[in-house]
Length: 360
Image: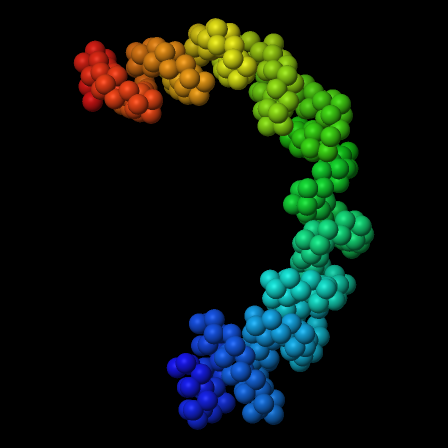
């Protein structure tokens, strides 16, 4: 092998050997890189610190974990064993799933007086506990992190992030409840309601989302639609329908909840009811841009359930608007026909629409 022959047969001084070791590492020739780094260290009374670090990392790459960890520890000591020096080492250890070896460095960082070091240690330890399924230790870490923080709200935001990453929905809900006790904005209530849904606390979730919608100060209709979307995302379709109905009751002149209810009907196979709600949405829409939005959703909804006849009829009506992307509508319809394998019908549609309604 050329690389190995060059290493063993060419006389290199320490600087050249160090550069060659680095080059081998960049080429991911880990075995030879480890040999080259070892030669550098053996030939030096006091090797440079980055050589010790790189040798340790290279040893991890070739599976010599204990020797690699020893080199990384040596690098740490030579830097003065300051907590923040462990961050680089920890990154390499976690990358090679050497979690137990990484923990001592992180616990020293957690004891630092520097806020950034404490935050980094919390994030890294949380990642380790998540990957190793150590819930109890994460909860203890959370309490320690909160106790050390001079900004409890920011600390709770960090805990929320880790709880979500770990799928610890009950913990997420508990932290959001504490935050809401202090501020209680509508958006936080929506987040709390979703966390309660995910943790299986359905009745509490319903009460929280109801509170979120009804404290909207004149914007209840939009808030109920947001609640409906949360229920829809969790597969709670009847609750979603009830939220949509509440949106309509709160803001009966808004076209958007009628579109949402029409799509709900389509998902249930209730095509006649969907058609009525889409028609109501068209009437409620105040501008062509709003009507165009309704038509686009209507067409997509009908196509999704295989009602190409209704989609075609809606396309024809939509093309009568003054402000709408007409070529897009035509080609969408033609593509739908092509997708069904009806090339003749697609060509006929393009020709008919081109001649009777638009010029493309």
